[in-house]
Image (cartoon, rainbow, N blue to C red):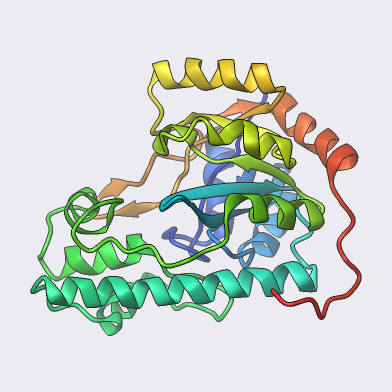
Length: 293
């Protein structure tokens, strides 16, 4: 049986290594496919495609778009996107601008709590330098807190300061998941709701399905067996593709976050289902690339 890990991150967003290393790890894990799904950027995809062609592994171009619904972070995965489309790239730039605003707000909140950390500290803690189309997120801030000795682990940084509802958590206005689905469809991609077990908003799933959601990430490193059964049932009821992945971010502080490449995987038949959905459900990207992002 051939398998794919459909959720991995690279140093283009908040992973710790280049996408070519994700491909190497996928080959080492015996996978036949892997998706690159960085937060609000597609900067790691070309390198992954090149490495995949050399390694004989299928690379699915993807993205993980950050949205908010009723104050809750909601992430929408997009598979088989046209990662070169100018309008889609412009829209991702707008999301990264909000992400930068959020980083500054979190640093300010940490300072108010007495933690002397700056964005310069965050930049200094990066494993590699960042390009303009790459992103910085909470794991990078957590890494800076770890290196300055304010926390003993990345998990503690999220639990005490950066996680949803924690002391320094902020959530500036962002697009809603409905908009992310529209953008993914218009970019020729297939929208899938990421790790629904982290939201406690099951009532949102049918509404997203009504506007084009094609899949549900049933299998995720942070889902319990009970949650997987629960979301299997919802996916079956709504006719959604059941995807899964490790949500690999690399290693920080000696710990892999969330899980190693291939720790959660699905059969390659799911990759085929996503490809079929791309051919039958995606919209045509608007020809007017001057549309505001």
